[in-house]
Image 1 (cartoon, rainbow, N blue to C red):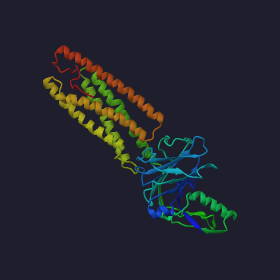
Image 2: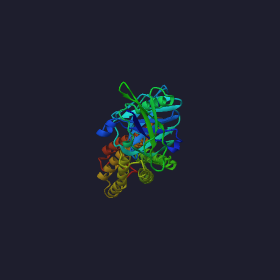
Image 3: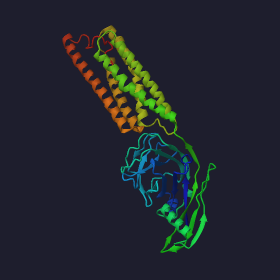
Image 4: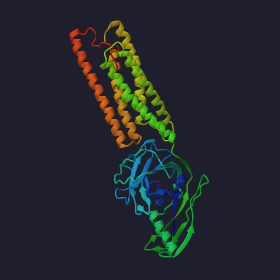
Length: 426
């Protein structure tokens, strides 16, 4: 008997038909509700990478990324976890395998793959591709680079109408059957057929051959593809600029200005030191509020999330920073009356150090999630690390000096330095 392998197909209009995704489901998977599902990703070898993910947004999606291997002769398949609008993370627990027919030929990358990790037979899908120099890596955990897509969007595939019979590789067998049909060889009968469904007024059907006949118990499979409905989106350059502004402003606040204010209160000794300190920290706090507002604006957009670690930590540190002026002011009021260091000051200093350190670490996490370049991450780490070490060195030196002063004065003034009656700051 003949079998018609129905391949659901989607080719983004933005890519002018040069990039296509196909899917096919064996009868056994349809009947049991679990099992292998076959996908094909095919596009120009000039792409840095091409990705396919299941879901309506990146967060929580199973994402399959392909790129050229180190030799430039085959493709590397990298299954990854989507984490919002940031570089997806490699997950070797996702079951996926490359099949025969995958590789690079005639300027095109092709990945025929099977996977058990499909969450639904009728669902939303996302796609993305990045232009640029070929990645050329054998590592499944390769750095994809900054998330500036040449194109991306959403589409639907109804896998219940993408049936491949009992084929173990419907895309390769479709090529064999179609070639035989065109040449009149190998199989005695040829029938043209199309199948599948279309939506959103987009009907781009492929016509292929359904061949019949038996040979040693085998069945020839051809394929029929239908383009699924889509909702394409082009890169939002304004959102990318806001993302960059968020990173720059927050880095300026937490890596430069906040530590500078903390150093000032320890390194300077004058009547104006406390005022300089409070003014510097107020400026840093305003920068942090602006950066937070930009971050929230980004997070409430499609494909972004507020319930992942970077924004959660960011909101936490900004919230704790809001308490700092209260602690400092309470200490200052009591100090002016009693001339003694208070628990308010101890809490102010300890909380300030914890919050700034946590914010600096979170900045590095943000860069990683945003898919920044490795050089950018290293530069951030070096600059923030040097400033943090200098800040801690100044703080330790000040504590040692205050300890000596307390010993000489018998602890009458609580060890607060001259010129820093706030006792304070981080």
